[in-house]
Image 1: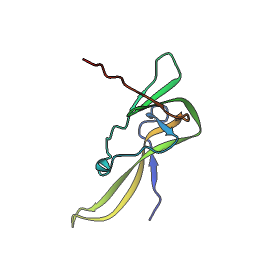
Image 2 (image 1 turned 90 degrees about the horizontal axis):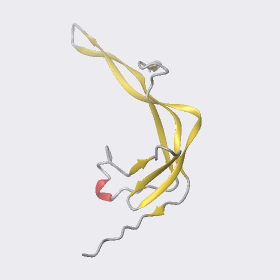
Image 3 (image 1 turned 45 degrees about the horizontal axis):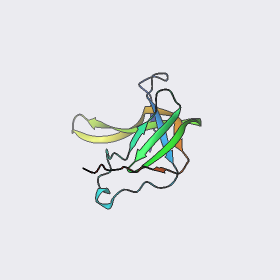
Image 4 (image 1 turned 30 degrees about the vertical axis):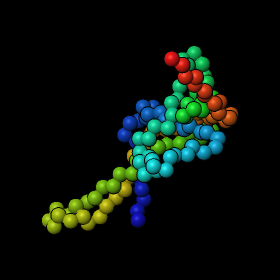
Length: 125
């Protein structure tokens, strides 16, 4: 296998910014949802506009965290396969793989404290 080319078509300064969410512990998924994880909503992430703290609400639990800069940035890559077709026989003679940069991660939102339990009170009618 030959070298894998990495390219960024968006430009260094215009690459979309991503962030990592780091929680302490395990986020468990209900067994009936195990096979359907794509686009699964696990919670709500909020940041009051005047503060640097974030809240992450998962079910009946609320976590409080803050933004932390990573020591070294990470890139988010998408694997792209290109096949070279033989025009006369219409068969794939070889294929190449490229990695396309689709985002840069320079920060994480760290939730390192224990979650606060949210208790809702139902109104009696």
